[in-house]
Image 1 (tube, rainbow, N blue to C red):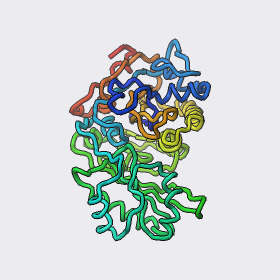
Image 2 (spheres, rainbow, N blue to C red):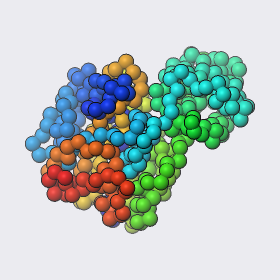
Image 3 (cartoon, helix red, strand yellow):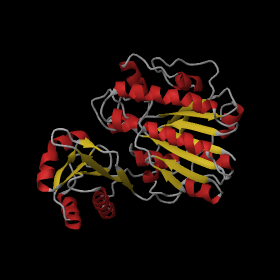
Image 4 (cartoon, helix red, strand yellow):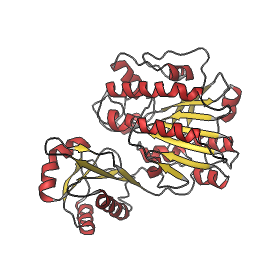
Length: 395
């Protein structure tokens, strides 16, 4: 049965968003700036698909006959967070951005959080997660108060040492916060940030958990389920959709685990048509937010080494889409997401060469393409590029 796969290279934008200045992101271009800063990247399989045909990237030249249809997606929703990007990929346009708190959360919000959970609060400011844990970790251990912080994104993050809160307790506290944070303070995600270790050597664990807003109606995923498609997710995808329209989910703590799990799921396909969704979070979490272009280069090259054999093993007529949800340029002073266009590579196994898809206005074209691929009803918005992928001609 037919299988379609979406791999979201979290944060790997390609610049060019016409409204980047409104978000303070003029000049952000994650892939190009990263590659230029490290003297180029070596990604022969992505190059063969056409990555260099859709953007100028040092070390990734255009090819005469790219294997994939290639282009860009331009976000139309308001915002640049992961939830907004992923929702739009599955057919939802968000007209109002989720609220952000660059100066910390209002006192009334923090007071209500303390009342409901029974914990005091430290921090309450925009900060890097590793930095605020290093700054306040000792006081947290001494007082038992939780570390609450945010970023340029719409997030309410709660950090706790495992000696203060075990995982079930931290998750309970986050669930309370998620229930509490209603409009006008309905942030896109509440995030559990457990850490461990001795003073001076605190380290975040791999047990992060995101509590997202339940998406409104309009996602393509439930429509695909109703059409008999088994929808399976890997990594933080399930959390971003609050489980809506997903049959099975599989955890992955990093890119390597995510890629390995995808390999396993693809090899063990059942009798129903499948959609497999994978988010590779390390590009964003480890390298974008930490302004580490060398790490991002290494991660991209590791993904490319995995991608080659995976492409070779794909069954004819199965569909693989590679894209991103926003930018996160590691070469700019900012450590947060950037408003950028994102790459689009669409590979239909056994077909080719691919065509130039140009710039698609709206991430929801991905949802429309999956709907047509599986013969399901089209989403409310979006234009399928599947005919162009099949014919090798512009849509």
